[in-house]
Length: 523
Image (cartoon, rainbow, N blue to C red; front, side, top):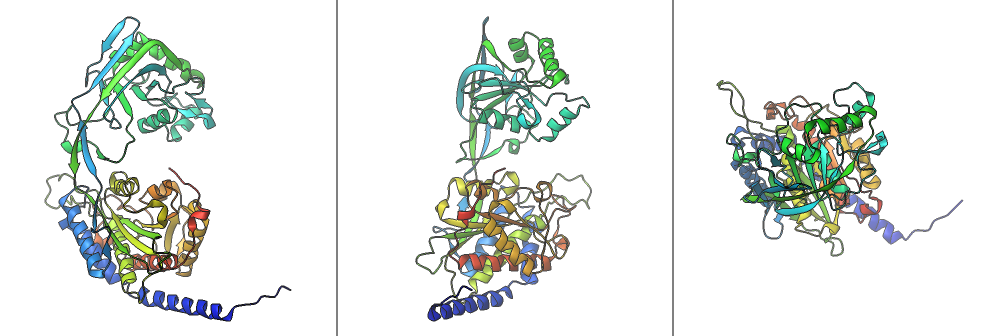
């Protein structure tokens, strides 16, 4: 039998610290009440805020409300301000657009709009290179199909067909390829980029489609009926532009001689689901694109509670939620018609939970050992713009963030159901959260991609920062005008907030380095 010896003074100090922290936790969780959560949700999801779209006056009103609440709680601004700009720009089509093919017979200039239209991934770039036909632009070796298996596209421009082989057939192979989730233009662009291509030309596959006109993105400059806000919102700090265009029948005839010739190539691929990729000898392309950028005001709201331990206060726990939603829709003319997407659960509830957790921290008898940062993200509904902006241009060192807790949609579902994930991100952080959740009476529901979705924890995971997402499940009111405060269970939301507070307090008062057990989770 192994025997142990103890330093009594250290043991007593540990017991006193545990009792002190426990007393603080139990006392402060009582300050997180359903009424507090309900009041926040009622304001943020009121008609006055018009659905909190990014950007909008309603979003700005919500940001001011959150900043005022933080100030009243004594939570300090970060670097002198509660408002941290996303550095968003509305990116319209610029004046410099040019697409030219060099062929064995001479040069052919393809006209904008009637001959080609850029996709929204473009930037201010000019590329020139040889052309490689890469079939449907798919790389699915696990399904026995790979258009890139026998061609080198590094530094070249790929020409690919829309959709997938066997598109109109009942072949199981076609169904498996379709189910892969890799057949969209965004995925084809990502695949081409990953293979080292410098650009992509998409052609509508002529075998299965009569309309071969280019569509690309619906740029306001090209279409009279397009609204200005149809132009994409982009982050100034996001340098992931990629030259991709949708070309029409003139390009098809120039490269392949005729539409019929390309159909024969398609049929050869579709017949046996075998790739047929090759370099287009004697052909090169030059593509110039540009964007007209207009600055858009939208802010993350950030507050900080600085830790009291000189050695640990430079480590940060992030507690976050997105406060934006999707705005309003056009009225159908009926007086009783509701046109406002109030977003009570999505995500006034998560915002309210983080404000409640901030309140508990502010009322604690002592400051936490580590610093705690409360972030309310804008632009989540448009592609995680707020959280992506934070990690691309961070106002504090990313390597000093020890964990991130994200609350998104936390007031629906059964009284005891809760999703926490992704489970694989970090065993120590997940197990700690799961243990506390179960001790609070939650039933942890197994996550899956369909039920979980993406949220603002993802950019942190992509930067190898341990992060968890707290979520109570999808429902029929998701992204509907019926997601109103009267559908929210403020008792459930307060229960999630109390769990978040207990977990956050323990993390903020420990010296655990969760990154030691972190696994990089992407997509």
